[in-house]
Length: 443
Image 1 (cartoon, helix red, strand yellow):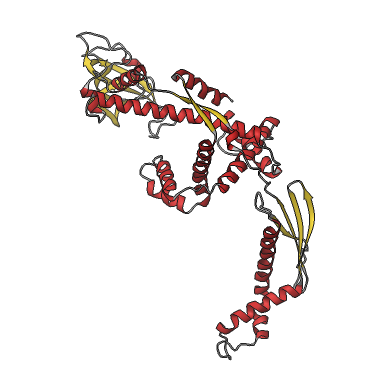
Image 2: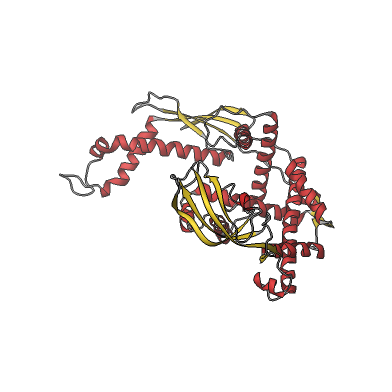
């Protein structure tokens, strides 16, 4: 077997592999000898079929297997000897497409090698981590929001007109062309005006009604309404108003706390404080992680595989185009050419991706089975009632497994670096942290 270099330009590599006909013939012979003891054929005892007869019957099929195995072994030996790691699936193709038995096999092997990633001095990285404490004002604001969400309604004074945000208790009957339709009636229905729970236009027509009123509401069902016989149709509702109630926020006391599973108000405040500080810590981590990646991007430099950059730039351009054109759901649109800005972002992503992957490998960072299970469970919550099917889908889909594993691995590598970098904490206000997070989103 001969391996000849045909391209060595930056990270691009090209080789021609020649497997001689004699090598292939020897490989086929070895396969026949290996299989001979188990072969049974009419007229011969088991294991006594002549090799010449076996070659005549099975030689052509074995020749294809021998060719594939020989080329695969040649590639494996090549990567082991050179130390090259292909950045993507190598491009392998036969040069002599008119090949026939008895000819040598000429194979072209082309790939982009992963670059050598330099060592990083973590102690030279200096970062500032923002720290925010949940003050009483923040806890009180969260408590007030809980009280509003747990609001009740109390009867307005007699003769009071319903306002937006009020609750009206109604009986109603829907009619299409004068005939009541199925599913269009209810009694003692509590409807909050302005909540958008009913067909567009329904709630607005009840603003100003009073208890005891009987009124008619006219609305048109949306064109895409689920029930085809009602979609796009104008209907009327006979409505009887039985009560008009004003919203009343729940009292902030022990009873409110018990509604949210706490023993008393002080326990609920403690839970709120912990939740707020967990949210602040999560936001602060986003900020310090971005600062870390910025420093790594500036401090570390190495050549990037052009193919990976091109692929990432196209993906970025495609994603941003769809964000700007949300009405286009599929991919039936003109080809989107990446801009210089897309390429610059792609170069950063590829560089940092390769860097973190290499640093994680050197540090022997691994994603545990329990971490993967937790990630799958978290994703499965987005498909209520179909959790089992989602688990099975992930188990059978290596690409999905990698999508779930990648961010966990990245975060663990970031934690590894932060533990070894110089990180100081600076106490800031909630507003300052919010400004820093918004600045990330604008970049």
